[in-house]
Image 1 (cartoon, each protein chain N blue to C red):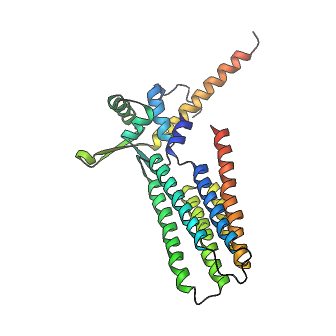
Image 2 (cartoon, one colour):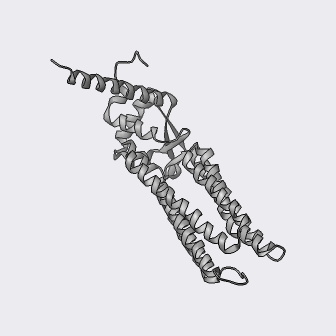
Image 3 (cartoon, one colour):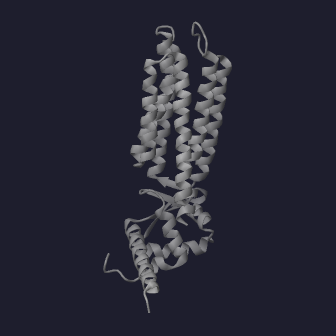
Length: 189
Length: 108
């Protein structure tokens, strides 16, 4: 019963990590493929950016459907924590979406690429650290810290390399966490 | 804790044990709606109410009713006393099972 209740009352982390891992791997990967070999760098193609938004929309929809079914009927501290985490990420991401075009003409392409591509990675990392602190949970802390390091490391890289780093080190970290989470769930149940 | 040798009769009933264990999986400070708890356990409303009343009388669960009419909602949560009672119950049961397995393997 505890294993069944836990499975039914808690959002499956491996599913969430897999969804975001695939979005990052294929989304950033598509943008990287579109800028690879550009001389001079002009930015990702419209198609690759559309791929990112379509993949992200599917991932957000899937996570919301799973979450709403799982946490239905649960109220209290974890509901409040989820609202704080969700709104922190949403406000941060909207800020990046607004700021990047505004500063696009006044900063170098490298700086713009860092803010536009590595910014969401660091924001996701900080959001996972916040989730870890609120939920007193270690795995999100490790993922969050890694994503902040991955995002910060992009400050020393060219735009194409930033995209490759975010796809492989960012998306790869999510997929690795999904594999670890699935194994722990299998051995724990 | 060490003095406990009897299984708590309030928790020992199978249905009440399932109720308490289900509520114990929630994080501290969380509650579960009556209907979701009912769905998870596959109980009728009357049956669940009966068991919740016994657990509430023992101080193991807290029920809170909010709203009225179609928006009425009853939330159920495990109290600190209930969590401690479950831990004690698990420890006593483990002790009993350990002693049973020890006596079962001893030479005659």
